[in-house]
Length: 211
Length: 186
Image (cartoon, rainbow over all chains, first blue to last red; front, side, top):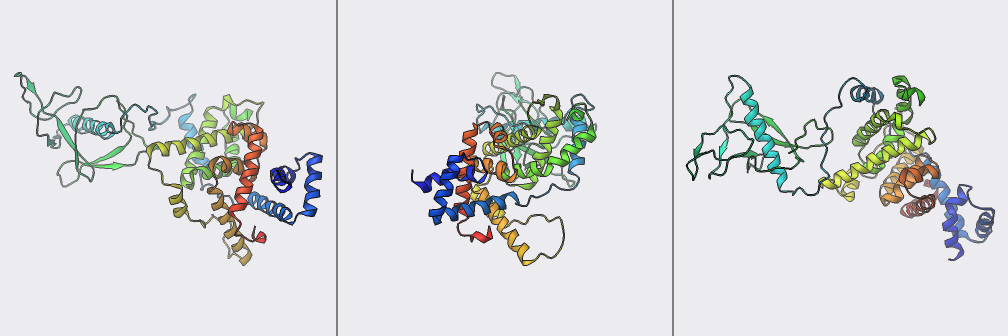
């Protein structure tokens, strides 16, 4: 290691008065002889001064109050249960292709379940799948049953039309998956069935769907 | 802190006021989004409050609170990577630019010297964001937040010698990135 490289390695300790007396002597002796290292030391001093005075952006107004409101709502000793927060799964075993299907399943529950809870409200029509499959456990159907191969009544699977891409996804085909995306469900005033729009899910989302 | 542990809201508000800007700015150096940094700073304070009884009086409070903030910031980075919807660093730099305006406490017409200082600060801040993460975090905690080497070692969970060498290296790298600037501008 040549003297200039050694000085580089001692620079921080020297400037912060943490170098040993022997190191300080070496640096001072070297600086008398080396213009390049003198400039280095001066530039580093200026840089540190600049960093110490780098403007810090303040938090927005009302920050402290917002924190206090939150702690009142989340104190375990306290007053309310913590708000539901979307927690992203750490399990890598869930294949990516299951995600939209899981979302579709969640939507199916919402679409099929919620309207039935409202008295006098007819469920919105759903798109019908072209072929019949096995019944879907746990998913209520609002479609008439059709005959299965063994003569039993087998309802056809339902499909959901998702988002602007109009992708049609079978409902209820996924188990053991977490939903990574959230969808907003709206029923237009003019009718025509529910509109499903993807929305960005983040830790502030109040919706968590997990199978 | 004893009052906070006992559940004093007023005492906790003092702690929030004291650390809020510093926490937000440290988190910002990781996530590069002031809104998100503020959200995470808020989350850090909530966690401090919820876990206030776990605080060990033998350690410095600042070390504890910065550890929580840094871990939240790192989790955010990991979360974004998992979702794969994070913008690339280069793209972020493009969006943020190297001259993102800082909020000013006072509203007045800046002098030429002030304008020059602001521009220089922005260039320095942008250069910091381009440092590799391990060097950037050490430099931010030491040279911007003024934490002791021992505190930084605890927060980043690396030996003190590693912190020193990272900070030294970070300063050299930063100086190198700012070579185009005349010395008197720094």
